[in-house]
Every structure is written in C-alpha cells, then in structure tokens.
Length: 134
Image 1 (spheres, rainbow, N blue to C red):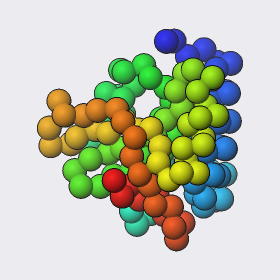
Image 2 (tube, rainbow, N blue to C red):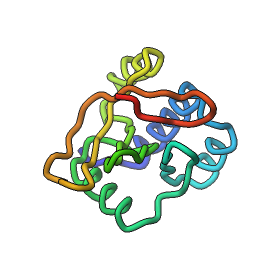
Image 3 (cartoon, rainbow, N blue to C red):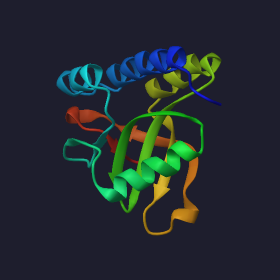
Image 4 (cartoon, rainbow, N blue to C red):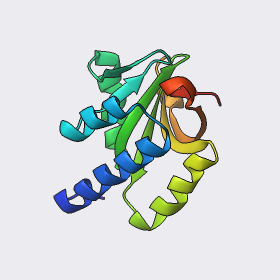
C-alpha cells in the first residue's frame, strides 16, 4: 500500500502514542516529534539511525510495504523494527498489545538476512530503556 501524506501524518501520531505507552523517555519522544527520525535502542541508549547496517535493515523493512517503522531495537545480531501497520482498523488492537508487553515487529537478521521475518516480540521498557526479551 502506498502511504500518502494524510496517512503518514496519522501514523506518526499513532507512533507517538505508542512510544508514550511504552514509557519511552519524553526527551526522545519530543525529539522524534520535532524532527521525525527513527531511533534505535541498543539496550543501553537510543541513537538516530545512521550506520550502513541499520540503514540496510530499514531499507529491507521499507521494501515490505507493511507500515511505518517508529522504533528499532538492536540486540543479538538482530534489529527489530516496531511499526504502525497501514490498516488503521488494526491500530487499537496493536496498541492493546503494548499493554500486554508485546508488539508486532519486523525482525532483521544481520547474520542471515533471508531469515528475517515479521512477528510479535516481547518487550521490557523498564528504566527508560527498550529491550527485546523474547
């Protein structure tokens, strides 16, 4: 599905709502709201996507046309992109999943990209960090 400007704006608002639900540090959320940029958590801190490895993973995610990536988690030779799907009717259910500790993600396998997949991942958001735990 092609994401037009109206849908993109709605998806960005939904992403902010989800980041707030995930208890992402307000400074990170404010920075993303000011200048929309994908942030990646390496389990210690957040950083703006910039390395070739990160950009390749994002390019592959974008080629799937499944939605808007709003946060990434880098761990164990994988980059997991949390995303907003293009179907607005699913957003409420996806937001509810956050409250249950999991979220839909595209998981990019750095070592073996052909093993990358879409699925649910479990999250730990304690201590102002975002960590994949399953």
